[in-house]
Image (cartoon, rainbow, N blue to C red; front, side):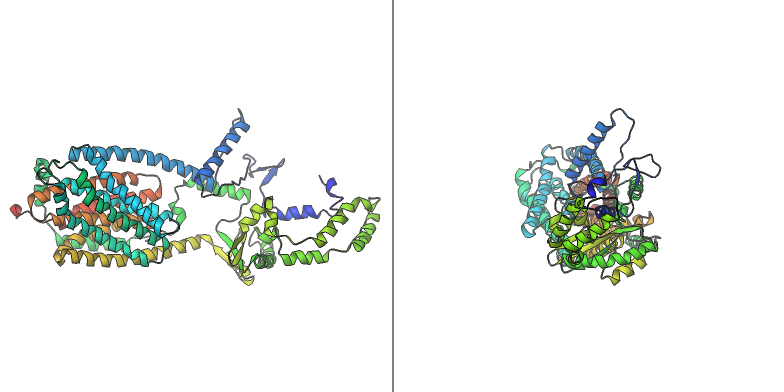
Amino acid sequence: MIEPLVPSDPTLESLALAESWAPGTAPHSVHGVWFDRGGGQALLAIQTRAPGFDPTGQAEAVGAINDAFAKARGDAPGRLSMTGPGAFSVEISGRTEREARWIGFVDTIGLLLLLLVAYRNWKIPVLGALPLASAGLAGLGAVALLFRDVHGITIAFGFTLIGVVQDYPIHFFSHQRKGVQPYASVRALWPTLATGVASTCIAYATFFVSGVDGLEQLAVFTIVALATAALATRFLLPALIDPDLRDPAQSQWLERLRAWVARLPQPRAAVFGLAVLAAAIAALAPGPFWQNDLSRLTPVPPDALAQDAQLRQELGAPDVRYVIALTGRDVEEALQRSERLAAGLDTAREKGWLAGFEHPAQFLPSQRTQRERQARLPEPEALQKSLDIAVKASPFRDSSVFAPFLADVEAARHARVLTPQDLAGTPLQVRLDALLLQREGHATALVSLIGLTAPDQVAAIAARAGGQLVDLKAASESLVEAYRQRVLWALGLAALLLVVAVRIALRTWPRTWRVLAPMAVTTLVILAVLRALGVELTLFHLVALILAAGLGLDYALFFEHAGDVREEQLRTLHAVLVCSAMTLLVFALLGLSSIPVLRAIGATVTLGVVGNFVLGLLIARHPHREDT
């Protein structure tokens, strides 16, 4: 292996260079194959062409690896284990798809049966889906029209928040009956429906001043979607519905339920006490209130994460938590700074503060360093003279065998300096691209660290070289906290605007109290239950709380709208029962999911549906004239 190199590289500098490119810590090697320290597992590190956030590309890569392993294994009893972001994304995607399939199937069957039993009309399930479908399309269209890119948060959270629109047609269906024209029926409901929609839209408008692009998109999506669904219910459905629907006011079992509800007290003092107790539990429950650690939200099983950590350690992979960033005006300045830092990190390695490190100048020295090295190369005559002297003291008989070496040195003396573009298509490009980030107006050199044991000392070394030790875990948690603070600030303003909007619409404070109290108390109860169970709240809980509050506002507005007229109370009770049953079915199943995000949203909204329905009945309803 070495003999062919000698004529062009008598000092074997190429081997020294290759050794410097080797990872700071390498896996145990047996016959040229990587093994774990126990020698029972062969290790293989694979880099995919597809980026880690491309689920289709990652699935194709995982499939190709499985096929190659099956072909190589033959009949041997080998077993393949894959870990890393790509393998995790494929596993999570598959599990999410399986759960979505069975949840969607059960939801679809359950909702169809519920609507058929509630209305005894096959058109109702189809018509009920029109406002929600129109809302989603209109919301996405508005965001695409006003913004260059659509954030994933807009789609994920947006479709969750507009779940309340499925209630709009239900109220219309439950109030439509024989002898009443559909347009007259929906016109009677419109002030109450419009109050709920307008109040919610005004509240969401506060997201525009949050300073977060994703929240601004979410506001556009939600406002347009809610308005579209309301208008579809107001103007589209009356033209499509059968006017002679069965009147829920004629239902005997519903009348018995209404009579039982009418006998329930309206314990306002007890509700106030419940609110105080719930607030105290939420505030005083032990443990952190908020969850900032994104790793706690991962659906990856703990044993898979443990295996990933073990394999990373066996492979000598860099620390995924800490990295040093050095920013320069251009690539040259960033590379020079990484060279200065390398000397300090060598000292840190000698002191045991870290096991190793990689920086971009290892693979592409700065142009200044390249020119300095060129300047130290001897001229042909001087090099030939030194070579002749060295050959006389060696087993070689003639220095002419080193003619390739002389030619290469002379070519190197006059060669232009290398740039990142010169490494394109080479194995070094992959490693350089991971450590050297080029942006308009600046460049950043990243230094990956292996086996870091003294972050404070290494941070001081980095600072002296003009760099910064970045704790990616702490950085992500601070971003989550900052984002949440903006959301909470926007929600606080939204709550104030919501109170003002409902007060203007209902005109009196007692009516406003009856509508807003169930929603507010339910929110406190949800927080108390979650905190008492040791749940640390996330942004996903916040989104679910917003949806639950929207549902509570809808329930309370219609309970208040029914007044003290028996028939209207029965129709409203029927509508809210159907609405709450539909929402409960969907989100209770989400609460059973193995995926933490879905489970958080599902459990929170489920609690909200139950709380808002019960408290709405106790607080927002009017006593029937004959029951007082």
